[in-house]
Image 1 (tube, rainbow, N blue to C red):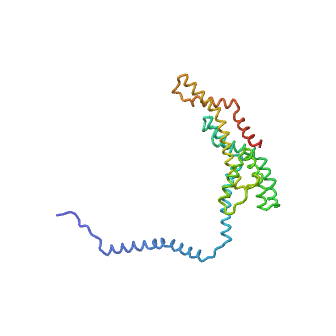
Image 2: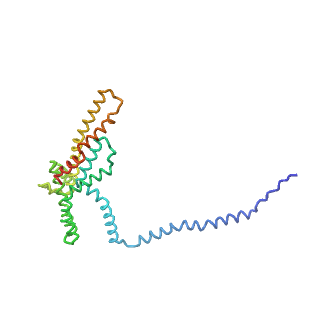
Image 3: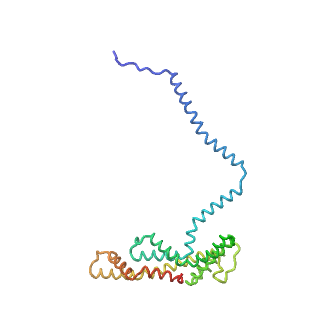
Length: 275
């Protein structure tokens, strides 16, 4: 006799009840899933039927433009000051010394900012007295304050370009802008008469060129030390010793003994006409 008990199968109506229970349990979830789509359709229909508020749209656009201008203002201000030349020269000096990580980038940037403040202090005071203070007191409109505040900065950029004898940067950029303009204007007779949209890029190009030229002259003493070190190591037969391992300490001690940082800072300040 077989001792195994016969397994009882559930009746067919039991399976039917289970399927119906599952369908009943899933129906609220399906309705909940369809609810967001219905809400989005209703919101879209309400927005389509509502009238467009032009004043609110204009305020939103002005707010977005204001935030964009505020975020770009520091970079724009640095690009029209002495920061470009000073930062490039100090970065090239660090590379010429053979220590690309000391002093760090933050130290170089902080030093460049402090030297920029010394150079731009007279112009900043002129901007404050001619534009910011009268505008805060209500004596000038926004347009008049902008015109008065731009004059000292524009004069500084034009003086720098003229001092570097690169006035042709202004004429070249002006010709390029006039060629793409639908209503070309006549060429100005004086450098100060050029628009700010021409003076600013001309000044930036001039500063980059001047900074690279100054960096080349800073490289020369360190290049001489590298050549002397390589010659001495080659004459003594120390071919396996890297020349940079010996020349880097020599360049650092020579630069420190010559008070190089102060000399470079004085050179940079005097290159702008003493600030």
